[in-house]
Structures are given as structure tokens and as C-alpha cells.
Image (cartoon, rainbow over all chains, first blue to last red; front, side, top):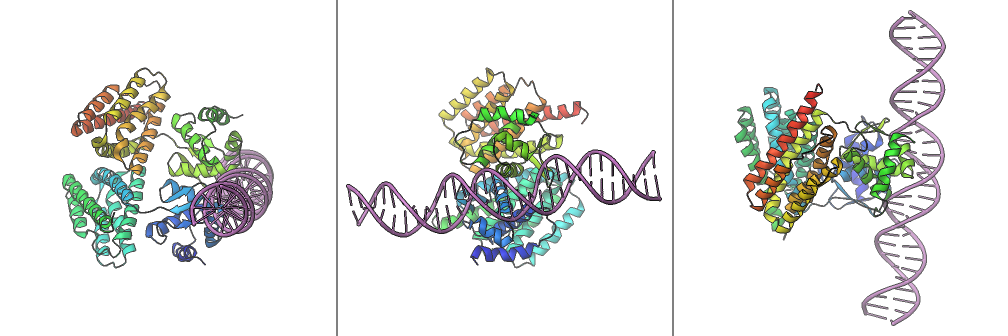
Length: 228
Length: 228
DNA sequence: AATTGTTAGATTGGATCCAATCGACGGGCA
DNA sequence: TGCCCGTCGATTGGATCCAATCTAACAATT
């Protein structure tokens, strides 16, 4: 069994078989999680035949799933050569950063007026969970849930989906080069939440921008350290 | 021959057969153009068998193309029910507007320092073309090219692609309910270009925001006039 | 020795076939 | 009369098969 097949075997069990309406949906969700979590490393070639036997189905659902992942910029697809998990480069990180620091303030601005105390409590709980969490992968997911809780009331499905998509990609970058991570910016998280509670849009946006900026500088430093 | 098949026959000729590496690529590009141009009206069901015979191929490339279009939010895909050209609703318009007014200023900010006189001349030429253009569909494309010329030097491929994608979707909305259009905001276009030439970021962003705002108000008015 | 042409295996792209699901219609029953 | 349920045609989801293309190794030629 190849490395890819072995990695997937675990994920197939983790995600579980139920509640997917089609095989394609199931494959797409599983591969997406595998790529974002780092279980499938950047540059890994995704052979259709191999995935088909790992998922115990034919190549067809695999192909359709790969097409969708391509449109989400999670795999690179070259005709007659196949799919490869997208690389992590400085350019891609900068790109992602530029997109997030445009979308997230917009989402927050639109969501803020509709956030309720219930939302703030959920966000608070997530922050506490992060404090007690050791696993980096799990911390990434909690980080995402914290931010999305604050954006969720924007009420615009596509804006929210795009934001979440790019937030997830950012987590992937961070996990990849901050491996042992440690601090996710809990201090900033708390200040952001406090500003939202006070309905202080200016302050909230400023903290968010600083949060983005700090993460980006960490990324830049990482690439600089290993000689571009 | 059904209405969909007839519409497509024209488009197949218009786009031309060449320079596509796979049938899937070709179908995707053609359908995308058809949806964005309005040739395929919102709500039109896209039957795989029908498309297959219109394109003179099997259902398989059609299926893969539809999957990619789904990920780009150009068609709605329901398991066992098939694909439908996405509807145009007020919510979707607001959503698109929120995304564009976040992404475009970011793209412009990053691009502005790298724009050259050559870029400005290209933009100027496009504006002149718009003045002499009668066809609404063609005006939409020129409008898109004008904006993208100003954003192109941002140097971040994904940001640029996302921006173009949502600008194209916006053109679709405008074409749909401003049917006979007329003014695309040429006045604002000229002021935007002038501000860019003067490297006046603040002014450029202000004009761009006003441009977005005006377009959105037109959309809102449209939906209000026909009873939400 | 380097380069080019050729050939075999691996892999993807596309076609065809079968199975599963949906929607509409119509008959049975309260 | 109105509702439920089963059947049938249409349509999509998935499997299997064949064709086209790529990659790498090897042979031939300069």
C-alpha cells in the first residue's frame, strides 16, 4: 500500500461513511479535509486509480471530485498528467492573505450589527477550548470556527463561503510552516471579541487587520529563513 | 431541436472549436460564456444528454464541466436532479456586490503602484470603444476588460481571478435587469482612470466605491420596482 | 558521448453501459 | 372526494471499457 493510500485509509474512517448523498460528495469532502489538514502533503500526486481503490469505488466519482477541488484551487490539474495537491509558496500565501484581508473585514462589518449575546458566548467557548488544546490540527479548526462565528450573521452565503474557504487555506499554510505553532494570537482573539461585544466597528477592524498582518509576517519570515 | 440546443449551436460556432486541450475544457468555457452572456437564461435546466448531443460528444465531459461550473457558483447542482443555471435574486446581487466591493479596492491598491502609461493607454482605448458600442453584451465585456486592466498588475493570480469572476457575474446581473442599459458609468470610468494616472489612491478608491454603490442602487431599484 | 528517434508501460480522457433515484401519473382505499 | 401508494418513463450516478497522451528507458546515429 502506498503512502497516499495509507494516509487516506485513516481519513476514510475518520470522516465516516454516512450522510453523503453521492459518492462524489463524499470523496470531495474527504479529500478536501485531507488536503487542508495537511494529511496529504503539498505536491502529492493524486492518482485516480489509487484513490479509487482506497475509496473502494470506480474512478468516476474520483474524477468529478478532483474537478471540483481544482475549481477551489486545492489541486492543480494538468491534462493527461493528473492532479497534484497544490504547493505552498510565498506567492500563494501573499495571494491568500490579500484575499482574506479584503473579505474578512467586509464580512465582519456586515455581521457585527446582527451578532447577539448567544453568538458571543459561542465564540467565548471556542476561545477557551483553544486554550486547552494541544493538537495543532484541531487548533486550526477551532480558530476557523471562532472567526466564522463572528462573520456568520453577515447573511450573504457566498461571501461567507468564500471567506471560510480562504480561512481554511490559511490554516493550512500556518500549520505547514508554524508546525509546532503554540500561539494562534489568542490575545488578539480576545480583543477582537471584546470590540465586537462593544459594537466598536473601528476597533474590531483594526484588531482584525493587525491579526492578519502578524500572521502574514510570520509567513514571510518563514520563507525568508529558508532562502526565499 | 430544443431552445437550449439552438442557443448552444450558435455559441459553439462563435467560440470556435480550436485551442482547447480537452473536451471538458471546451465545454466549460463555452457554457461559462453562455451563462455569463445571458444566452442561457437563469433557471434553465441543463440536461446532460441534450448538451452532449449539442456538443456532439458523450455525457462525460459535460458532467465534469458542470462540476466545475458548480464550484464557480454558475450552476446549481442537485443530486439526481441535475444542473440549473443559477437564478438572479436580490440576495445574490447583494452578495456579489459585497464581495466585489471588498476585492476590487484591494486589487486596485496593489496594482496601482505597478501600472504603467502603457496600461493607461489600453484602458483609455477601451473607454473609447465603449462609447462607440451599441451592443449590451459587448459593452459588458469591455467594461470588464477596462476594470481588469487596472487590476492586472496586482501580481496575485488568485486575487485577480476571483475579482474577474465576480465582475463577470455582476455584468450578468446588470445585463439582465438593465437590459437596454445605456450608461455604464462612463463618467466614473474616466474619473477612475484619471485618479490612477495621478497615482491618487484615495480618490481612485472613492470613485470605485461610488461606482459600485451606484450599480447596486440600480439593482435594488430594479427588484423594488417588481415587488421584491 | 550526446542527442534524437522509437517503443512499451502507465495514466488520464472519453464512450458506452447498467443501476439508482426522481417525478408524474393513475388506481385503490377510506 | 381526497389522500396514499405503486408503477413507469426520464434523468442522473457509477462502473467498465477503449482510445489518446504522456513518461521514461533504450537504441541508433552523428
